[in-house]
Length: 347
Image 1 (tube, rainbow, N blue to C red):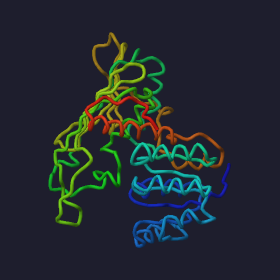
Image 2: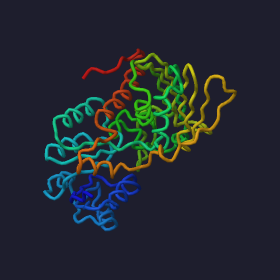
Image 3: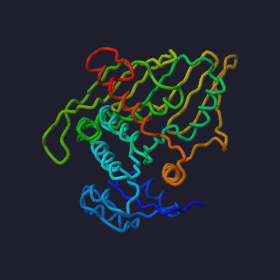
Image 4: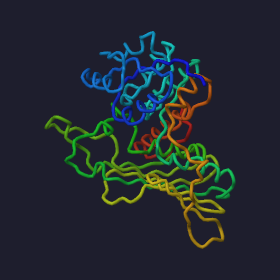
């Protein structure tokens, strides 16, 4: 067993770090939590005490500069992802970056090119959406369950932003989060794995509450990330995709991905990981159980460490990230221009 010592530094250690990354890393032999930097030192000190970091840094750059840090986890909001990634790679560190990869396509492209020109491991945090049945769906598609794919429908409705008096969330601030909207990027990443990349995008955006209170202030500010998106896209194989995302509805129902082909149908309930399907000639949809050997469990931290130690591949890598960021930006380019946007985007 390869238990090579690997020193880890964290740039940002919020909810996802405490929920998944830090517990996952603590289980891996040879991994040492070296240094952490948060926006506020007090929160970093609490994380350090709880998880055993040896050092607390006031500046994220100091985490990267440490000789005893071999790899960094970037769990800060997207506005910092590009700068921290480029600095980390320049310093010879392996980089694990939290989703979403970057605020926009230009930033993601810089990260992707830097990764290509480096011998360090670079990995993005995978979305938990549809993870459990991921291997099964890919197998069914490969085995021809659907025949020729014809239609993709995505339904994702929540009440996250239904109350107009709710202060602006950081995910609604494009400076912090970029073009990331609700779970658009995560669902597109899943679809890319299943069906490949898209050829073009046409979109409409709705801002049901165009101004919201600024957090900690009585001032209202403009909301520049849409409350709802309607998207039509086509795949490179000619299938038609229709997406409807909203964070401003009551009782939106289960989020789901629907795949329709010439020979069958698959419906994936995103949060419950329940799969239904039927083939031509059957009378109704029926549950499809995920065999134990095809269950995809969460092991992002272990995959990253294994890649550092053994050179094994990672997923999602920076190319996968570049493609979903490209799609999310194409949605906004189309919504603002009223025109279809072709993919891939120009660098």
